[in-house]
Length: 277
Image (cartoon, rainbow, N blue to C red; front, side, top):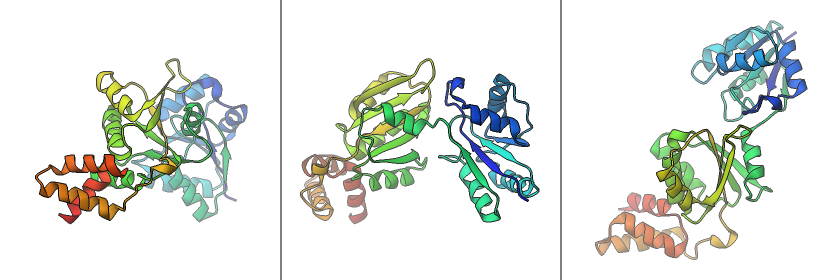
C-alpha cells in the first residue's frame, strides 16, 4: 500500500504559528521533503523533531520528484514543506501533488500560514473576490502579456515580489493600471519588522525610488472600478494614438495621453499601436 504525502504549512515568520497538528505530522512521517533543508532543519530543531530530510525545489523537482514517488509507492510517508507558508502554492510542490494524483498516492493537507490571504486580510482593500497572481514572469514579453490580461480585472489582485525586483514591478504596475490605483504593500509578515503601507501605485513607486526595499513583499492591488470601462473601443483608441504619431508625437507620449482620456491602460495602447504600425 502506498504511503501518504502530507502538505504541511509552516510559519511565514513567527515560529509560534506552527500548529500542534503540523508538529505531530512532522514528527510521525518517515521523512521530510524540504525546499531548503537548512531552513527546515532550524524549524525541526526548534521543536525537537528529528527526521531525515531530502531536498525538493524548483531546479531538482524532476529528478527528486521521481524519487519521492518511488518511496511513497513503496509505503513510506512524507511531509512536504517549503521555507515558509503552504507548499504547492506558487511553489513546485504542485508538481509532486500532480504526480501523486497520477500514481494513486494519497495526499493530505495540514493547513497552516500562507502570506497571500494574510496580506489580503490586512490590506484594507476589498476581500470578497480576489485573484492570486503569485510572482510575475521574469521575461519582459511574458510580463507585459500577463499585466495586459489583468488591465480590466475588477477583483483585488495579489502578487508576490522579492525586494530586488520591487522597483521594476511597481513601475510596471503603474504603467498597466495607472498611478492612482490603490495598493497595500505588506512586508515581513508575522516578523519583528512587519509593515503594511497603504498608498497609490504612484506613491509606492516614488517611495521606493528613494527607500531601499527590504524583506519579502506581498502586493495587494485594487481591482478596476466598475465605472472605469472605456467609453470608446480599443480599436478606436489605438486609432487615436496612431493619429497622434502621424502629427509627430512620440508613440509613448501619444499612448499616455490617449490612455488618460479613454481609460485604457497605456501599456495596452502602446503594444497594440506597435503591432499596427
